[in-house]
Every structure is written in structure tokens, then in C-alpha cells.
Image 1 (cartoon, helix red, strand yellow):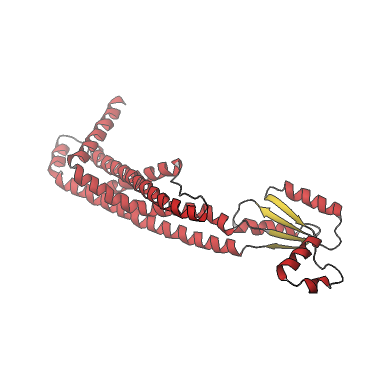
Image 2: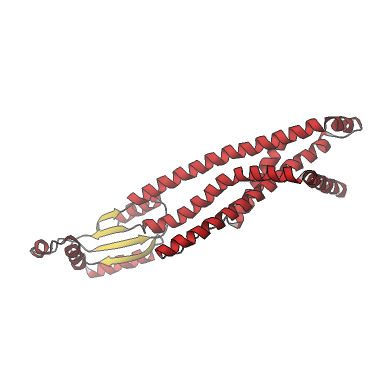
Length: 290
């Protein structure tokens, strides 16, 4: 067991030495592949930041629940308590029909016409602000509210949410396709690099086979080379993204000051960074294995 572990350590040291034989060419190769890998990852970072701020820009979704005519104050208090205790509700606002009529007069400019009405035709209403959720869950919540007693009509303003969801879905698909194509490119580059190494060391491999070297022993350095190369490519991609985000945030600071807001692009989380390194190392190993 100890001997096998020491063999792996020796192979890793030999692999790192291979990278240092031609540092200039190695660095250039890693940067080129790292730039390619940083494109979909950068798209994912931008999309994640846009998704976080777009909901704030679009406004909080509202559900308007209009009460039936003649709803008593006791029923209104009971409904208010139920809404406040509901897990899907962030907060609510009760709009009495008298206040709604005044707001209508101010917003439409038809105060003379509205003032001539014999009675207030508007119902009492609750403006419900749900917690953050997607469009489908919002619609399910709206349908659930329709079944509540004393609710005459329940309306959800979901047009902006549909547009936002469609744009984000398109962005996620674009990033996924780009990631798939560039992942294949990383596998192909590693495949070609390992193939050239095998051709260069063909005589050495044949001699090793003659003195009893197993296929696994011969294969191991090439697999480690691909894995380490993929790991370095992932690190290069993280570095490139960090530099680009720093430059973008520097430019954004001037723009946000003009609008009196504060917004910065967030980097990948620790979990996402580890996932990127593991995924890129796996792609390098896969290219070498192929």
C-alpha cells in the first residue's frame, strides 16, 4: 500500500517536472485553453449576477385579491391574519375601498365623474407581496388564493416575470451550449497533446514493456499529465475571470455613482470554484484516457 502511494507521488512529481521543461510554451498553452474555458464560466457569472439584480429592477411581484361586497371587518381581520401567517407571503397591504376611490380620482383626473357616483363601486382589496419564487409557483399560489372564501377576484401581474424567465432560460441555454463545445475542445487538445507525447516516447514505452512494465504503469503518467493540465486550466480560468470582474467592477463604480446606486459583480462562490476545478481536471483526465 505504501509503495503504491509512493509510486503515485513520484508520478505526480514527474508530471510537474514535465510542465517545467518548457515553461513558456506550457504557460501559453494553459492561458489559451483557460481563456476558452473562461468564456462559458464568465457567461455563467454574468447571468447569475443579472438574475440576482433583475428581480429588483423589475419590481416585486404583486397579487391583488379583491374582496366580495359586504365583507365584514371581522372577516377582513381574519383574512389578514391568515395571509400574514402564510409561508408564501412576505408582507401584505390592505387597501380600503374609500382609499382606492381617492387614488383613482387622483390618478385618472376624473374627479367630477367619480364624485357624481351614487355609491363607491370599488371593493376592498389586499395587495399581497409574495416571497421570491418562480412564475409557476406564483401562479399556483394565486390559484390557491382563488379558493379562499370572501375573495371575489385574484389577479397576478406576471407578465414581467414571464419575460424575465424567458430571457434567463435563453441565457442559460446559450451558456450551456458554449460550455459543451469548449469542454469538447479541452478534451480534444488534451487528447492531441497526450497522443504526441506517446509518439515521442514510443521507443521508451516499447523498452519498458520488454522489461515487464504493465499497461497501467505506462498509462499512469499520461493520465496524471492530463488531469494536472486540466486543473491548471481551471485555475487559469478562475484567474482570468477574477481579473475581468475586477476591471468591470471598476467601470461599474463610475456608472453606479451617476445613478446613485451601488452594484458590483460577484465572483464565483467557493463551491462553484471547486466544482470548476474538479470539472476541468476531469476533462483533462478524460482527454488523456481517450
